[in-house]
Amino acid sequence: MNMDLCELSPSYVRSIAPYQPGKPISELAREFGLDERNIVKLASNENPRGIGPRTRAAIDAALGEIARYPDGNGYELKLALSRRHGVDMSGIVLGNGSNDVLELLSLAFLGPGRSAVLSQHTFAVYPLATQARGARAIVVPAKDYGHDLEAMGNAIGEDTYVLWLANPNNPTGTYAPPQQVEALLRRVPERVIVVLDEAYNEYLPADLKGDSLKWLKRHPNLVVVRTFSKAYGLAGLRVGYGLAHPSIADILNRVRQPFNVNSVALAAAAAALDDMEFVAKSYADNLQGLRQLEHGAAALGLEYIPSFANFVTIRVGKAAEIYKRLLRRGVIVRPVGGGYGLPEHLRVTSGTPEENETFLAALRSSLRE
Ligand SMILES: Cc1ncc(COP(=O)(O)O)c(C=O)c1O
Image (cartoon, rainbow, N blue to C red; front, side, top):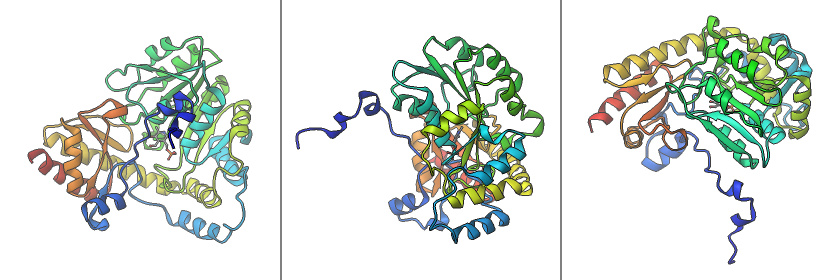
């Protein structure tokens, strides 16, 4: 065949650089002939605590019903979310991970001739989802590794329909205070959908959480996105949600696959939402883990970006090389050069105390190698 079949897709799709996920444990085990049990993965901001017993029981019960399609409307989970957050069910959109909600937003509001504003060093899915719809990404230089909200507001053009904003941000762990986010919301034209991605919200201390859900009433162009992948420990099941004005939720539901969230995930998420104790313990574990990683990095004479999430991004110098040395020692972290623009840093998820210690010891010897 002479034809390159890739040529059949639009040029804006062909030019997408694929998302680089954290290396799976099984892949590293195959590549280096390592025992999976000895590998430490701190690459994808997962919860080292796993899941709670109530969530496990809900999963076991849901397994008996998997021959049937899930409830495409996710009634039980939406009811639980609406009670928890004091929002109307008609303003909730469920996704196959919050990533799915981000895709739905780009599908519904972006396209050729439109643009989206986002920050340098932010979540890789924003430029990907923007480009996949043929829209233009306006990337605003970061300030002290975080979002420069004023510059982001200034960057909005006539053709801008979406502003992507992760708070706390991934991969830097930086945090924008609520007053600044609200000031941005006040000045953004109503036409621009502000996607406030709060994937790491549960890791913020109560006094920093802000009132994003209250803002929904005042700002109908705001969409708050949350996930069950982080503090709730359900990354592998894929559940996230968006909270929005019912008209926006209505549009998103039109472009959504009818059964985008599977039945086991729906049951697990509803149970996990109720398990406040598990989330409180995950929060406390994480604080300890962050301190351990930060102290460990400082003891090695390394700078790190103070984090408000469940990972720390550490400046190690030749990060691509150190990443490889860590892999040989059975430790997987996340390089954030490439699309993230931080070639001297590595992002490290806060794991169990033992995992963090294994990482720090491997880092110490990798730096000396
Ligand atoms: C800022 C941010 N948003 C969204 C996601 C997507 O998470 P999920 O699709 O698992 O809900 C992530 C995952 O790392 C993230 O860091």
